Length: 347
Ligand SMILES: Nc1ncnc2c1ncn2[C@@H]1O[C@H](COP(=O)(O)OP(=O)(O)O)[C@@H](O)[C@H]1O
Ligand SMILES: [Mg+2]
Image (cartoon, rainbow, N blue to C red; front, side, top):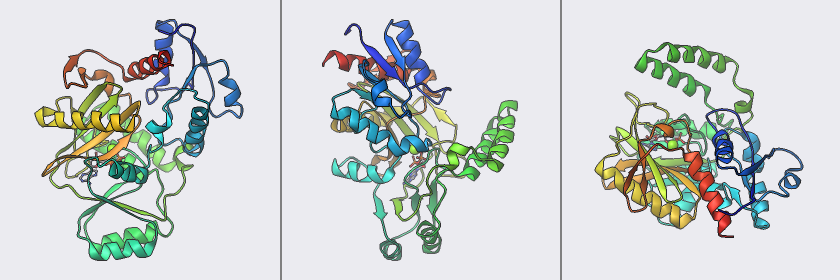
């Protein structure tokens, strides 16, 4: 390993973020690190004397959405290594960007549509078939994903989309999910989470309501029917962690359901293969994929540079590029920092 490196880490608190484990990794491996604040006016100055930056920013961070890509591109302009780099993150939480990227590389995707004026969107609605899946370009846990059954429903949606728009953070969806989780496991913990959900519904988290309103576009996908699950593959360098997520009862949406299995089945391996191929083509440091099963095989519905670290520590192992299964305990955060350090060796 290259000696005397200093990694700049932007710290965040909590298990939604990678930074705690990055710091732990540095401490355990005697790697110098400096905590930096990416939101500070003099972040460029703060990074002097450092060899690389690690910053895990998440989709609901309206501030990061404003400038993270700009900061990262600026650092890349002086060849300063960053996780996530631009190739890895420019399309993060932007399904519109992902549409063109995945079409450009001819990845196996669910057919999707984008319109940027009401007239084009209306014309499409008049000529297409239903149901279709309408999505905001951002959001997670399936909260901004809806099944639109008819032309009438679609018109109502676009009136809103080309009118007042939608809040990017759908409070009602978050509360509904907490109730669904309670119905499933009936634990005291999930009961209290409903209480917390109600409080959050009435007094939304300030950060969440600061996200810009989504409006003036229509993004839609063909509906892939009869899916009882999706498959999530998270590729980090030459390893992939996977899970199968089951849909909510009476619903087509898996992400955020909380019901899952580590067994992706024989057919699911194809997703791992495709995820490695696409990651290679896009030269990403890490990339998570959501696949749904169509009649002619699994197709990508979404990509994200980061997946929540909460679930993966329980993964019984990971896949290699040759689709060999390595049974081990793991932390995706360690994979990420290891890869970044190794990439410094090559410089
Ligand atoms: N076109 C589709 N056809 C069928 N199911 C879909 C489709 N798109 C998404 N889904 C289901 O809805 C879930 C949420 O969709 P996704 O685009 O991944 O949104 P999010 O960003 O909220 O995770 C997926 O996990 C999948 O189960
Ligand atoms: Mg998803």
